[in-house]
Length: 63
Image 1: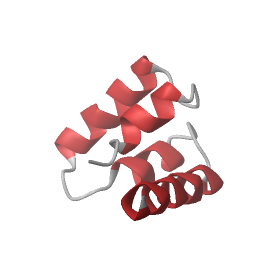
Image 2 (image 1 turned 120 degrees about the horizontal axis):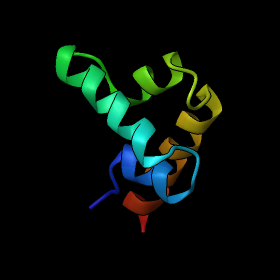
Image 3 (image 1 turned 120 degrees about the vertical axis):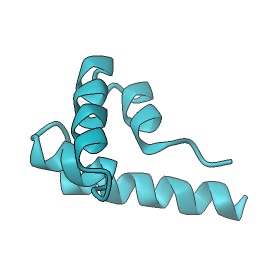
């Protein structure tokens, strides 16, 4: 099972637990939006971090 995106960024210390909670709060109000999209919009992570997560998932799924 692939690690959830918020857990991934917190584990790598690219996102604090508090920032992840902020993203989740926005996501609860706007459930059609993706975690990564919100985190980028809030300035917590960059698009390159999303791409890194996608590569991580592809590697995990391929192993």
